[in-house]
Length: 101
Image (cartoon, rainbow, N blue to C red; front, side):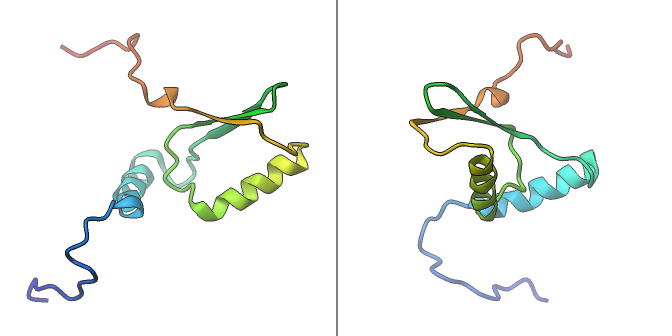
């Protein structure tokens, strides 16, 4: 209540914020996009045995989902992966967008 520290665990360790950043992003997403909006993550495979993942920044895609995703990919016939390719082009600026001046 007085603004003092309530709890401190390993305060001298520098840690990556990780999931803490998902909290404000999820709140902004819910307020801006609506609770029915779903971020898309696409999975592709090719004849060389590569698995390509193209994510678009889904803050709700948590580690607990990875097992379920692997199960779905296996159900669809994916038995082995030669190479994992992550496509981050969804985060590149689009030069075709008109800029405000």
